[in-house]
Length: 330
Ligand SMILES: Nc1ncnc2c1ncn2[C@@H]1O[C@H](COP(=O)(O)OP(=O)(O)OP(=O)(O)O)[C@@H](O)[C@H]1O
Image (cartoon, rainbow, N blue to C red; front, side, top):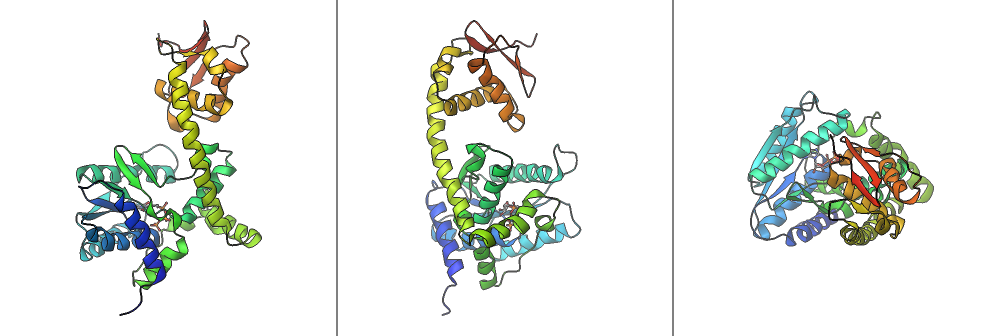
């Protein structure tokens, strides 16, 4: 019997670890584009899931953005049925007419379709093929836009996606390993033309910046960036926990926040409290910026009788009688 290729074994190990932590019931659903990362993930899941007594399904999204995308999706679905996935679904989505750039619109449409499929099939979890290289790119992009710890923590290995657990088992696996695994298994992989399109910042990071960093600083740089994300994520979790308690303690009976309580917090916790509270009030998370939270903070720490702060979503907050409170939309 031929020896198992090390990348195939490594990917099976991380997938087994991810699936082991799930409660019983419901299939796991693999989100598979047909690219090397998610195909390697799918192949490992098809092997591991039945051995853990779980069923595994697969969803591939056809964004309809390129000629041949429907055939690509169909080819992924045919392979998935052959290797035993059930259910197998091709989700066709409409990208045009959504807000944001084309990349954001495709992503939004994709996650919507994936969440719907997961709900419809009562999935225990949705699995995506994000790798350590994707994580390193995410950290670099966050650094470049001046993101705070939330951005620098990169993508979590597990998060809630509208009620469905989203798992990223491959965050410790390199893209080189997923390619090698697919080659060892004889799987044909699809190359997403968007991944090499230089009009996307992420493609430029992938094609130019990371290779330049590796040349300048050595091959450990990708792993190190991913480690930074893990370390920051752990600190974030601790600070987020403090902020939950601080928000509860600062809350007044009418829903406003006590300025005195806020003033007694360290800035890292106060910023989180104000960010969370702004979201509670209905400020749109994607549009809620550092500048907005900073302006709320100034109502506490640099008070000179300034007027209300406008938050995205038509929310206004002012300081009055020792409290921060939303202005009634009258
Ligand atoms: N068309 C799609 N259908 C289903 N899942 C998708 C699709 N595109 C992306 N995904 C999921 O999202 C993950 C991240 O995709 P993205 O395009 O950002 O990264 P990638 O590194 O190019 O992944 P891949 O090599 O699998 O295409 C993929 O690994 C896959 O799980």
